[in-house]
Length: 348
Ligand code: ASP
Image (cartoon, rainbow, N blue to C red):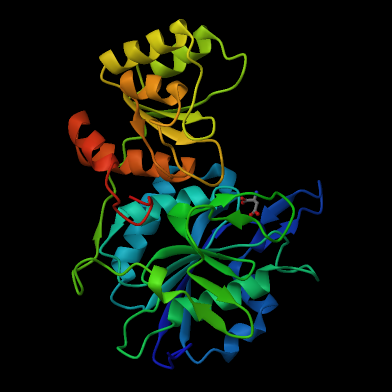
């Protein structure tokens, strides 16, 4: 396995985020700055034998401002430059990195090259930054090829704090610590120590080798998320589940997919199902899966027409719905596809 093939070429795509931010001299808040300054801060990148080109989005954003239009722009950029590069590194804010990585995993079909998202908790210009390490390892992973000349990790993933995680399995779990991301239901694809150790058995390969990359940019965003909590009221539940603008609702439930069994609640769920809303159950827990057959509280939901999201993260559930609903107006089809493992996002 050659960690950085001298012939490899990487496109580093800068979208914004803390990694490239600097304190505004007027109000001291962190704001994105110029990409060239990032390169100045990491002269180590010059030691790579692979070629590294860069592309900077305009405007640069704090990832709290990410919209699906950015995902479309990213997918189109990767498609347009796909033939010129062996891998892509996406510098992105941590706040919504799991949403973006999940979305790209569905939008890029038959991906055969690495798309590695990374960022940092401290700006790259600060002394104790985690950005340098994250960036350098992300480039190494994006350029890694096996003895057959193919990419070692042909997946959309996140590299952060020494771990390479499948993007659509991740959640941001820490607002301060360097260990910011967790993949509660799937093992790391690689761990970076003295060497980068790839967990080859868990790395997903394109189902059809040599199939050309296809991108999906039609996203239907008519999705709401209802987080179940003690004290939730009929008004709130009805507004979210039966809202006229909503085609699908993700129910974030307790434990293995449980929610209250009060008649008013189940009546509203049935009402939404009768309106042909797509209702998807994911757990609020970071690890484990929905199993609506385990408790009566889950079985009621299943009987009322709610689908199991199995071990999908909320981020991935949202991205999968945007993607599937963008491919067809047929809700029956969307419900069927939701149950399938499309990009390694569920343990089906
Ligand atoms: N607010 C920042 C962002 O998501 C946080 C970060 O990058 O860590 O863009």
